[in-house]
Length: 197
Image (cartoon, rainbow, N blue to C red; front, side):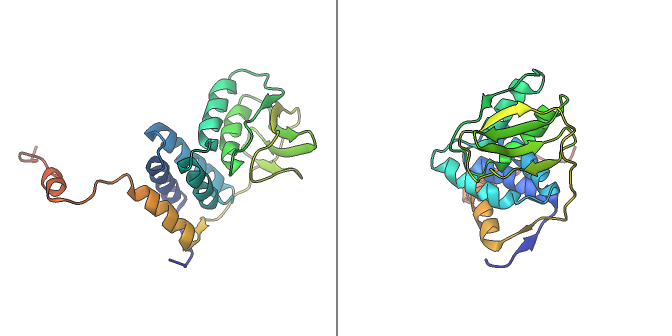
C-alpha cells in the first residue's frame, strides 16, 4: 500500500485504539492512545506517524508515552506545583505526552517542558502547543514546570492524511485484536438461541 489516505479524526482515533491494544496495551490505555491521537490530529500533528513509531518501540519493550502521560496527568492535574518534575529519558515519539500535558494545564496555567539548554515545548490551558528550539523526537533530560503567561492558542487542522505504509502498520496491529476465522468462531459468533426479543 503506497497511497496516502485521508481519514476522519474519529476514524484515526479508533484505528490507533485498536493498534495500541494489538501492541499489548490494556483496553483503558488503548482508549487513552486513541483519544491522544485525536487531540494531536485536531492540531495538525502527525498522530498516525508518531503512533507507528511508539507502538513499534512498545512491542520491543520500550516505555510508552501514553502510559507516562496518563500517569503524569493523574498525578498533577489537581496538584498545582510540578516544578522540576522529570520526564523519563528515552521516550520515542514524545509528542504523545502533549495531550496529557494539556490535561495538567487545565488546572490553570501552561505546562512548559525544558532541558538544561532551554525550552522544549509549551502547552496552554486552551490546548495550544508551541514547540521550542530544543524539541526532539525522543525525551532526554526533560523537566516539567508551570508558566505564568497565557500560553499559545490552539490551531485547527484539516482531516489527517496518513501514508499507506503507516496505515498498513497500524492496521496490522489492529488486526491482532480480532479472532481468527475458524469453524468454531463462525459457529460461536451468533446467539445460541433466537435473538428476537
